[in-house]
Image (cartoon, rainbow, N blue to C red; front, side, top):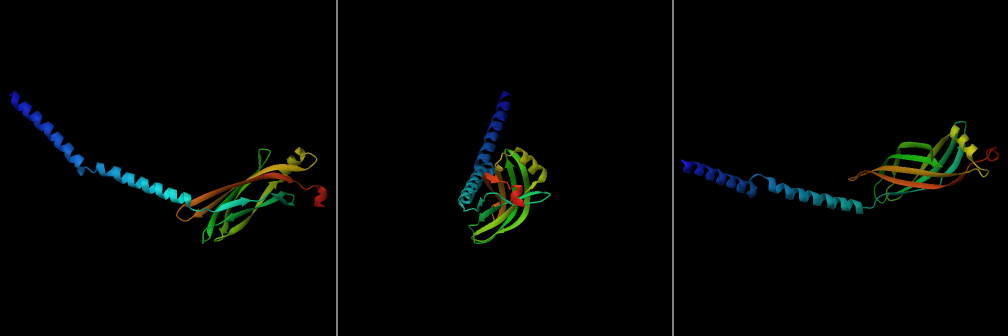
Length: 186
């Protein structure tokens, strides 16, 4: 009787080996997934490298200057020049800005859908910055006799590139701006 039990054990062991051989031969589909994942990974790397090497739109930001004063506040402005290396125009999704002085945010805002960047050229966008009157008054109290303020203007231009998708160009400028005196206004 002991012989029958040994035969059953041997048959089960052999059956197990046969199942492993069948799976290793590709019957289960597990071996092909590694090759496919490797190919997909290489394709992603190739596309990422090519996109990184593509020319992309660039931007520059002019200094901030005084535009006007009203009861609501002070209007400042700057120009953003955006260059387009492509032979077709590109839509600008939005333009966001933050105007800071002495580490404090003075004004911030968003210009939704400011237009298009012209094909194979440079487009100049005017960036209006409105500083609330109450903040202007607090700035005037802190100013020395020269009426200069140090500032930082940070701008992000979000554009929609075909194939790549949305792309943000960050630019910033800093400098010193002389506020107008009452004598300059009247």
